[in-house]
Image 1: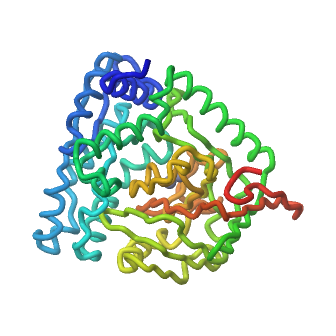
Image 2: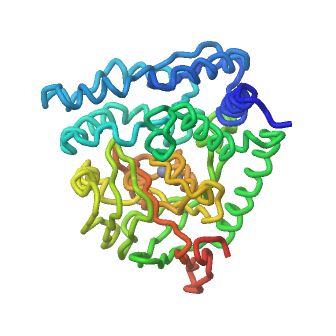
Length: 411
Ligand code: ZN
Ligand code: ZN
Protein backbone atom coordinates (compact mmCIF):
# COMPACT_ATOMS: atom_id res chain seq x y z
CA UNK A 1 0.00 0.00 0.00
CA UNK A 2 1.34 3.41 -0.85
CA UNK A 3 2.09 5.85 1.93
CA UNK A 4 0.04 8.92 2.74
CA UNK A 5 1.45 12.41 2.36
CA UNK A 6 1.80 12.81 6.16
CA UNK A 7 3.64 9.50 6.47
CA UNK A 8 6.07 10.49 3.75
CA UNK A 9 6.59 13.99 5.16
CA UNK A 10 7.32 12.54 8.61
CA UNK A 11 9.71 9.96 7.14
CA UNK A 12 11.46 12.72 5.18
CA UNK A 13 11.87 14.75 8.40
CA UNK A 14 13.20 11.67 10.22
CA UNK A 15 15.64 10.97 7.41
CA UNK A 16 16.88 14.56 7.71
CA UNK A 17 17.19 14.55 11.49
CA UNK A 18 18.43 10.98 12.06
CA UNK A 19 20.43 10.04 8.94
CA UNK A 20 21.28 13.49 7.54
CA UNK A 21 22.07 15.55 10.63
CA UNK A 22 22.40 12.52 12.89
CA UNK A 23 21.36 14.87 15.70
CA UNK A 24 22.76 13.80 19.05
CA UNK A 25 21.02 13.70 22.42
CA UNK A 26 21.25 17.14 24.06
CA UNK A 27 22.53 18.87 20.91
CA UNK A 28 21.18 22.25 19.78
CA UNK A 29 19.98 22.83 16.23
CA UNK A 30 20.15 26.05 14.23
CA UNK A 31 17.32 25.88 11.71
CA UNK A 32 17.33 28.31 8.78
CA UNK A 33 14.00 28.71 7.01
CA UNK A 34 12.04 31.24 5.03
CA UNK A 35 8.43 32.02 5.90
CA UNK A 36 7.44 30.07 2.76
CA UNK A 37 8.76 26.84 4.33
CA UNK A 38 7.52 27.50 7.88
CA UNK A 39 5.21 24.46 7.86
CA UNK A 40 8.04 22.02 7.26
CA UNK A 41 10.32 23.91 9.69
CA UNK A 42 7.77 23.07 12.40
CA UNK A 43 7.81 19.38 11.39
CA UNK A 44 11.62 19.42 11.65
CA UNK A 45 11.49 21.10 15.07
CA UNK A 46 9.05 18.46 16.38
CA UNK A 47 11.19 15.64 14.97
CA UNK A 48 14.38 17.18 16.41
CA UNK A 49 12.92 17.49 19.92
CA UNK A 50 11.67 13.90 19.68
CA UNK A 51 15.20 12.87 18.76
CA UNK A 52 16.48 14.53 21.94
CA UNK A 53 17.46 18.01 20.73
CA UNK A 54 18.24 20.39 23.58
CA UNK A 55 16.82 23.30 21.63
CA UNK A 56 15.89 24.39 18.11
CA UNK A 57 16.82 27.98 17.32
CA UNK A 58 15.14 29.19 14.14
CA UNK A 59 16.63 31.85 11.89
CA UNK A 60 13.67 33.11 9.85
CA UNK A 61 13.98 35.08 6.66
CA UNK A 62 11.41 36.27 4.17
CA UNK A 63 12.09 36.34 0.45
CA UNK A 64 9.69 39.22 -0.17
CA UNK A 65 11.53 41.24 2.47
CA UNK A 66 14.82 40.44 0.75
CA UNK A 67 13.36 41.68 -2.54
CA UNK A 68 12.12 44.90 -0.91
CA UNK A 69 15.52 45.55 0.66
CA UNK A 70 17.31 44.82 -2.61
CA UNK A 71 15.12 47.36 -4.35
CA UNK A 72 14.89 50.13 -1.79
CA UNK A 73 17.76 50.03 0.71
CA UNK A 74 20.40 52.71 0.14
CA UNK A 75 23.56 51.46 -1.62
CA UNK A 76 25.77 51.70 1.48
CA UNK A 77 23.41 49.47 3.50
CA UNK A 78 23.97 46.63 1.01
CA UNK A 79 27.61 46.48 2.07
CA UNK A 80 26.61 45.79 5.66
CA UNK A 81 25.52 42.60 7.40
CA UNK A 82 24.60 42.64 11.11
CA UNK A 83 27.63 41.42 13.08
CA UNK A 84 25.37 40.17 15.90
CA UNK A 85 23.77 37.68 13.51
CA UNK A 86 27.09 36.28 12.34
CA UNK A 87 28.44 36.28 15.92
CA UNK A 88 25.35 34.47 17.21
CA UNK A 89 25.74 31.73 14.62
CA UNK A 90 29.43 31.41 15.48
CA UNK A 91 28.67 31.20 19.17
CA UNK A 92 26.27 28.31 18.58
CA UNK A 93 28.67 26.51 16.25
CA UNK A 94 31.42 26.82 18.88
CA UNK A 95 29.02 25.11 21.32
CA UNK A 96 28.70 22.25 18.83
CA UNK A 97 25.20 22.99 17.53
CA UNK A 98 24.13 21.37 14.27
CA UNK A 99 22.92 23.48 11.35
CA UNK A 100 20.07 22.79 8.99
CA UNK A 101 19.02 24.98 6.07
CA UNK A 102 15.69 24.47 4.35
CA UNK A 103 16.73 25.59 0.90
CA UNK A 104 13.94 26.42 -1.54
CA UNK A 105 14.67 29.77 -3.17
CA UNK A 106 12.38 31.37 -5.71
CA UNK A 107 14.63 31.27 -8.81
CA UNK A 108 13.10 34.47 -10.14
CA UNK A 109 13.00 36.43 -6.88
CA UNK A 110 15.48 39.09 -8.00
CA UNK A 111 15.00 38.73 -11.75
CA UNK A 112 14.60 42.47 -12.24
CA UNK A 113 17.09 43.60 -9.59
CA UNK A 114 20.40 45.23 -10.46
CA UNK A 115 23.05 42.42 -10.45
CA UNK A 116 25.61 44.83 -8.95
CA UNK A 117 23.33 45.55 -5.96
CA UNK A 118 22.57 41.83 -5.48
CA UNK A 119 26.26 41.02 -5.63
CA UNK A 120 27.11 43.70 -3.00
CA UNK A 121 24.60 42.22 -0.57
CA UNK A 122 25.66 38.62 -1.28
CA UNK A 123 29.30 39.56 -0.76
CA UNK A 124 28.61 41.47 2.48
CA UNK A 125 26.83 38.43 3.91
CA UNK A 126 29.58 36.04 2.78
CA UNK A 127 32.25 38.28 4.33
CA UNK A 128 30.40 38.55 7.64
CA UNK A 129 29.78 34.79 7.72
CA UNK A 130 33.39 33.87 6.85
CA UNK A 131 34.29 32.64 10.34
CA UNK A 132 31.04 30.75 10.73
CA UNK A 133 31.50 29.11 7.33
CA UNK A 134 34.79 27.60 8.51
CA UNK A 135 32.69 25.33 10.76
CA UNK A 136 30.86 23.86 7.78
CA UNK A 137 33.67 23.97 5.21
CA UNK A 138 36.05 22.08 7.49
CA UNK A 139 33.31 19.71 8.68
CA UNK A 140 33.73 20.80 12.32
CA UNK A 141 29.97 20.73 12.91
CA UNK A 142 27.22 18.59 11.39
CA UNK A 143 25.21 20.52 8.82
CA UNK A 144 22.61 19.74 6.23
CA UNK A 145 20.75 21.31 3.33
CA UNK A 146 17.41 19.94 2.15
CA UNK A 147 14.54 21.33 0.11
CA UNK A 148 10.76 21.41 0.28
CA UNK A 149 8.28 22.85 -2.23
CA UNK A 150 7.16 26.47 -2.16
CA UNK A 151 4.42 27.90 -4.40
CA UNK A 152 6.96 30.12 -6.24
CA UNK A 153 9.39 27.29 -6.89
CA UNK A 154 6.64 24.86 -7.97
CA UNK A 155 5.27 27.51 -10.35
CA UNK A 156 8.68 27.87 -12.00
CA UNK A 157 9.05 24.09 -12.50
CA UNK A 158 5.51 23.13 -13.47
CA UNK A 159 4.20 26.19 -15.31
CA UNK A 160 2.06 23.87 -17.47
CA UNK A 161 -0.08 22.84 -14.47
CA UNK A 162 -2.75 25.48 -13.81
CA UNK A 163 -3.62 24.59 -10.22
CA UNK A 164 -1.19 25.64 -7.47
CA UNK A 165 -2.19 22.75 -5.21
CA UNK A 166 -1.49 20.23 -7.97
CA UNK A 167 1.90 21.81 -8.66
CA UNK A 168 2.81 21.54 -4.97
CA UNK A 169 1.76 17.88 -4.81
CA UNK A 170 3.83 17.11 -7.89
CA UNK A 171 6.91 18.79 -6.42
CA UNK A 172 6.45 17.03 -3.05
CA UNK A 173 6.16 13.67 -4.85
CA UNK A 174 9.30 14.47 -6.86
CA UNK A 175 11.24 15.41 -3.72
CA UNK A 176 10.05 12.28 -1.87
CA UNK A 177 11.09 10.11 -4.78
CA UNK A 178 14.52 11.78 -5.28
CA UNK A 179 15.17 11.30 -1.55
CA UNK A 180 14.05 7.65 -1.62
CA UNK A 181 11.26 8.48 0.86
CA UNK A 182 8.69 6.80 -1.38
CA UNK A 183 10.54 3.49 -0.99
CA UNK A 184 9.31 0.99 1.62
CA UNK A 185 12.25 1.54 3.98
CA UNK A 186 13.89 4.93 3.27
CA UNK A 187 16.63 4.51 5.88
CA UNK A 188 17.67 1.13 4.43
CA UNK A 189 17.52 2.58 0.89
CA UNK A 190 19.89 5.34 2.01
CA UNK A 191 22.27 2.89 3.63
CA UNK A 192 22.58 1.05 0.29
CA UNK A 193 22.92 4.27 -1.67
CA UNK A 194 25.68 5.58 0.63
CA UNK A 195 27.53 2.26 0.26
CA UNK A 196 27.42 2.55 -3.54
CA UNK A 197 28.82 6.08 -3.47
CA UNK A 198 31.51 4.96 -1.03
CA UNK A 199 32.60 2.24 -3.47
CA UNK A 200 33.03 4.85 -6.26
CA UNK A 201 34.94 7.13 -3.90
CA UNK A 202 37.31 4.35 -2.90
CA UNK A 203 37.94 3.38 -6.51
CA UNK A 204 38.84 6.98 -7.37
CA UNK A 205 41.12 7.28 -4.34
CA UNK A 206 42.88 4.04 -5.38
CA UNK A 207 43.54 5.42 -8.86
CA UNK A 208 45.34 8.50 -7.42
CA UNK A 209 44.74 10.49 -10.60
CA UNK A 210 46.75 13.70 -10.97
CA UNK A 211 44.69 15.12 -13.82
CA UNK A 212 41.18 14.89 -15.23
CA UNK A 213 40.49 15.58 -18.91
CA UNK A 214 36.96 16.72 -19.81
CA UNK A 215 35.60 16.60 -23.36
CA UNK A 216 32.08 17.51 -24.47
CA UNK A 217 30.21 20.04 -26.61
CA UNK A 218 31.86 23.40 -25.87
CA UNK A 219 34.09 21.76 -23.27
CA UNK A 220 37.78 20.90 -23.51
CA UNK A 221 39.22 21.22 -20.04
CA UNK A 222 42.08 19.77 -18.00
CA UNK A 223 41.96 19.91 -14.22
CA UNK A 224 44.99 19.06 -12.09
CA UNK A 225 44.41 17.34 -8.73
CA UNK A 226 46.74 18.05 -5.78
CA UNK A 227 48.93 15.16 -4.70
CA UNK A 228 47.07 15.02 -1.37
CA UNK A 229 43.54 15.21 -2.80
CA UNK A 230 40.89 12.90 -1.39
CA UNK A 231 37.60 11.96 -3.04
CA UNK A 232 34.65 12.40 -0.69
CA UNK A 233 31.01 11.27 -0.94
CA UNK A 234 27.68 11.39 0.89
CA UNK A 235 28.71 10.66 4.43
CA UNK A 236 31.14 12.83 6.36
CA UNK A 237 32.37 13.09 9.94
CA UNK A 238 32.37 16.14 12.21
CA UNK A 239 35.21 16.95 14.61
CA UNK A 240 33.59 14.80 17.30
CA UNK A 241 33.65 11.81 14.95
CA UNK A 242 29.87 11.81 14.43
CA UNK A 243 28.85 10.92 10.87
CA UNK A 244 26.35 13.05 8.94
CA UNK A 245 25.15 13.53 5.35
CA UNK A 246 25.26 17.24 4.46
CA UNK A 247 23.12 17.10 1.32
CA UNK A 248 19.78 15.36 0.84
CA UNK A 249 19.63 14.23 -1.88
CA UNK A 250 23.26 13.50 -2.76
CA UNK A 251 24.61 11.66 -5.80
CA UNK A 252 28.09 13.19 -6.05
CA UNK A 253 31.66 12.06 -5.44
CA UNK A 254 33.88 15.12 -5.21
CA UNK A 255 37.36 16.40 -4.54
CA UNK A 256 39.61 19.43 -4.73
CA UNK A 257 41.13 20.83 -7.94
CA UNK A 258 44.69 22.11 -7.87
CA UNK A 259 44.14 25.87 -7.87
CA UNK A 260 46.70 26.80 -10.54
CA UNK A 261 46.31 23.72 -12.78
CA UNK A 262 43.06 24.28 -14.64
CA UNK A 263 43.32 24.98 -18.38
CA UNK A 264 40.86 25.17 -21.24
CA UNK A 265 37.18 25.98 -21.66
CA UNK A 266 34.10 24.55 -20.00
CA UNK A 267 30.47 25.12 -21.03
CA UNK A 268 27.52 24.92 -18.64
CA UNK A 269 24.80 22.37 -19.32
CA UNK A 270 22.11 23.67 -16.95
CA UNK A 271 20.93 27.05 -15.74
CA UNK A 272 22.45 28.29 -12.50
CA UNK A 273 20.21 29.97 -9.93
CA UNK A 274 22.62 32.23 -8.08
CA UNK A 275 21.38 34.67 -5.41
CA UNK A 276 17.92 35.01 -6.94
CA UNK A 277 19.16 35.47 -10.50
CA UNK A 278 19.47 32.90 -13.29
CA UNK A 279 22.69 32.52 -15.30
CA UNK A 280 22.37 30.22 -18.32
CA UNK A 281 24.23 28.90 -21.38
CA UNK A 282 27.57 30.16 -20.19
CA UNK A 283 31.20 29.23 -20.65
CA UNK A 284 34.40 29.90 -18.73
CA UNK A 285 37.96 29.83 -20.03
CA UNK A 286 40.84 29.08 -17.64
CA UNK A 287 44.55 29.69 -17.90
CA UNK A 288 46.76 28.33 -15.09
CA UNK A 289 43.68 28.03 -12.93
CA UNK A 290 42.39 31.55 -13.38
CA UNK A 291 39.18 32.43 -15.21
CA UNK A 292 40.44 34.65 -18.02
CA UNK A 293 37.28 34.86 -20.10
CA UNK A 294 33.56 34.25 -19.72
CA UNK A 295 30.44 34.38 -21.88
CA UNK A 296 26.73 33.85 -21.14
CA UNK A 297 23.52 33.99 -23.14
CA UNK A 298 21.54 34.76 -19.97
CA UNK A 299 22.77 36.64 -16.89
CA UNK A 300 26.24 37.65 -18.12
CA UNK A 301 26.34 40.60 -15.71
CA UNK A 302 25.45 38.38 -12.73
CA UNK A 303 28.16 35.91 -13.81
CA UNK A 304 30.77 38.68 -14.05
CA UNK A 305 29.78 39.97 -10.60
CA UNK A 306 30.11 36.46 -9.17
CA UNK A 307 33.61 36.00 -10.64
CA UNK A 308 34.63 39.46 -9.40
CA UNK A 309 33.53 38.76 -5.77
CA UNK A 310 37.15 38.38 -4.64
CA UNK A 311 40.47 37.00 -5.95
CA UNK A 312 39.52 33.41 -5.06
CA UNK A 313 36.28 33.58 -7.05
CA UNK A 314 38.46 33.61 -10.19
CA UNK A 315 39.47 30.00 -9.39
CA UNK A 316 37.83 26.61 -8.83
CA UNK A 317 37.33 24.92 -5.46
CA UNK A 318 35.46 21.68 -6.24
CA UNK A 319 35.34 18.94 -8.88
CA UNK A 320 32.34 16.62 -8.62
CA UNK A 321 31.32 13.55 -10.60
CA UNK A 322 27.64 12.64 -11.00
CA UNK A 323 26.44 10.15 -13.60
CA UNK A 324 23.78 11.08 -16.13
CA UNK A 325 21.94 7.97 -14.87
CA UNK A 326 21.36 9.63 -11.48
CA UNK A 327 17.64 9.62 -10.62
CA UNK A 328 17.57 13.42 -10.54
CA UNK A 329 19.01 13.64 -14.04
CA UNK A 330 16.65 10.91 -15.27
CA UNK A 331 13.65 12.86 -13.94
CA UNK A 332 14.33 15.25 -16.82
CA UNK A 333 13.43 18.21 -14.62
CA UNK A 334 15.64 21.28 -14.42
CA UNK A 335 15.12 22.28 -10.79
CA UNK A 336 16.61 25.79 -10.76
CA UNK A 337 17.80 24.74 -7.31
CA UNK A 338 21.51 23.97 -7.01
CA UNK A 339 21.02 21.23 -4.41
CA UNK A 340 19.02 19.25 -6.97
CA UNK A 341 20.72 20.34 -10.18
CA UNK A 342 24.24 19.67 -8.86
CA UNK A 343 23.15 16.13 -8.03
CA UNK A 344 21.91 15.60 -11.58
CA UNK A 345 25.17 16.53 -13.23
CA UNK A 346 28.95 16.60 -13.07
CA UNK A 347 29.78 20.01 -11.69
CA UNK A 348 32.55 22.37 -10.64
CA UNK A 349 32.48 25.13 -8.06
CA UNK A 350 33.76 28.65 -8.41
CA UNK A 351 35.42 29.70 -5.15
CA UNK A 352 36.54 28.03 -1.96
CA UNK A 353 37.74 24.45 -1.70
CA UNK A 354 36.71 22.16 1.15
CA UNK A 355 39.78 21.50 3.34
CA UNK A 356 38.41 18.00 4.13
CA UNK A 357 39.03 17.04 0.48
CA UNK A 358 42.77 17.24 1.19
CA UNK A 359 44.67 14.75 3.39
CA UNK A 360 45.21 16.56 6.70
CA UNK A 361 43.50 19.62 5.26
CA UNK A 362 41.26 20.39 8.22
CA UNK A 363 44.39 20.75 10.40
CA UNK A 364 46.17 23.09 7.96
CA UNK A 365 46.54 26.87 8.25
CA UNK A 366 45.35 29.07 5.40
CA UNK A 367 49.00 29.32 4.19
CA UNK A 368 49.49 25.55 4.22
CA UNK A 369 46.24 25.05 2.33
CA UNK A 370 47.40 27.61 -0.20
CA UNK A 371 50.67 25.75 -0.69
CA UNK A 372 48.83 22.45 -1.13
CA UNK A 373 46.81 23.97 -3.99
CA UNK A 374 43.54 24.70 -2.16
CA UNK A 375 41.68 27.78 -3.31
CA UNK A 376 40.13 30.17 -0.82
CA UNK A 377 37.26 32.57 -1.46
CA UNK A 378 34.28 33.95 0.41
CA UNK A 379 32.20 32.31 -2.36
CA UNK A 380 31.48 28.67 -3.20
CA UNK A 381 29.07 28.34 -6.12
CA UNK A 382 28.47 25.05 -7.94
CA UNK A 383 27.70 25.07 -11.66
CA UNK A 384 26.68 22.16 -13.82
CA UNK A 385 28.75 20.85 -16.75
CA UNK A 386 27.59 17.23 -17.09
CA UNK A 387 25.56 15.75 -19.91
CA UNK A 388 25.09 12.50 -21.81
CA UNK A 389 27.84 13.76 -24.15
CA UNK A 390 30.55 14.31 -21.57
CA UNK A 391 33.68 12.12 -21.53
CA UNK A 392 36.23 12.24 -18.71
CA UNK A 393 39.65 10.62 -18.60
CA UNK A 394 41.82 10.28 -15.52
CA UNK A 395 45.60 10.63 -15.82
CA UNK A 396 47.95 9.11 -13.26
CA UNK A 397 51.29 10.55 -12.14
CA UNK A 398 53.13 8.30 -14.66
CA UNK A 399 51.07 9.73 -17.53
CA UNK A 400 48.87 6.68 -18.12
CA UNK A 401 45.25 7.52 -18.91
CA UNK A 402 42.05 5.70 -18.01
CA UNK A 403 38.49 6.41 -19.13
CA UNK A 404 36.38 7.40 -16.10
CA UNK A 405 33.18 8.70 -17.74
CA UNK A 406 31.88 7.90 -21.22
CA UNK A 407 28.75 9.60 -22.55
CA UNK A 408 27.95 10.98 -19.15
CA UNK A 409 28.22 7.78 -17.13
CA UNK A 410 30.79 5.78 -15.15
CA UNK A 411 32.81 3.48 -17.35
ZN1 ZN B 1 29.15 19.41 -5.18
ZN1 ZN C 1 29.81 22.62 -3.98
